[in-house]
Length: 119
Image (cartoon, rainbow, N blue to C red):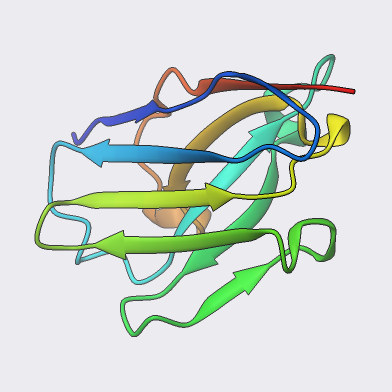
């Protein structure tokens, strides 16, 4: 089964930017919608929130709380998914994961990458 490796998380001040990267060990082109999830402090795995996803055709969907600040992209030739995060807020603090947006296409979760936004 494929693996996902997320990176790019860090401690930043409010208003700052980060770019998260997700590297897949297998082709992601077979998965139409790839997404970024986040698990806030104290939340369970079942409470992970899908904050953005992108289709193979480039259609992007965002949860309201990140619209206008986050941009998701993908490069199927490199099996990579990205999340550009601008104007970060303390409430964006979470561990971020990538995976298929649809549960039936998900592969085992990676370790995630920690994003901490200080006020």
